[in-house]
Image 1 (cartoon, rainbow, N blue to C red):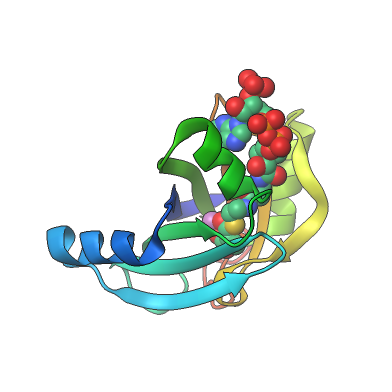
Image 2: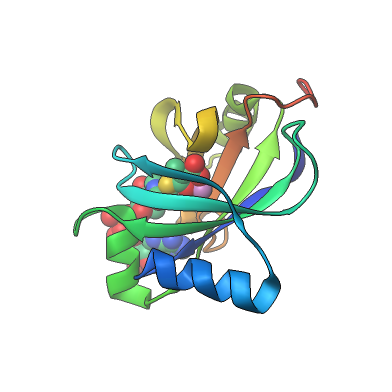
Length: 146
Ligand code: V0V
Ligand code: CO
């Protein structure tokens, strides 16, 4: 099952400007930065709460790496803003199968590499009330299969 909100993904045109905004206005700092070519993003994680046991919550700021990536298309269509909500789970395979069993389209045949060694799956926004939903299993998640 779901154990936390792992992160909220925010689409940005200028990652450095967005980092500066969250630092100045909310005092949040970058804990992790990564380029994920498969997902077409340069992204940073800003921790909002929690500890290093795999159960913290983050903001994920996303900048597209190329013009036909999911985040680039989102920016063209909607502009900057909330792109997805990511639920943490102790077992992403189980969580994805449960969603599929409820008739929700799971994007991709198996979990993909996510930020900082996590394993991620996306659920189609049209099957989730307009919310692009990500399931994420952190590498150090201690919640187990529940
Ligand atoms: C599209 N739609 C959305 C949406 N993107 N609705 C809510 N939130 C979004 N972000 C709606 C769109 O308005 C359409 O609605 C419908 O879904 C189909 O969208 P589309 O414009 O035709 O675009 P597609 O089909 O080319 O792509 C949409 C999907 C795509 C969601 C399938 O973006 C995708 O595969 N996303 C998963 C991968 C991803 O987003 N990676 C970047 C984050 P109507 O017109 O049908 O009503 S990477 C990440 O988070 C990482 C690495 C991490 O956390 O570690
Ligand atoms: Co994400």
